[in-house]
Amino acid sequence: MGLVIKAALGALVVLLIGVLAKTKNYYIAGLIPLFPTFALIAHYIVASETRH
Image (cartoon, rainbow, N blue to C red; front, side, top):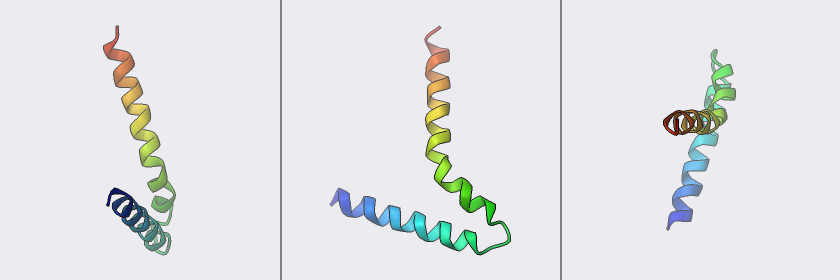
């Protein structure tokens, strides 16, 4: 069941990127895949600051 949810979520993200790519703000479509990367960087920064 978890795999089905992950596949549906991935399909939803792909559709969102496709829709945004056709709008005036097409550059947002390029930023959507980077959100998980930004979140990982933020978690790393917070974790490294709390260790000191």
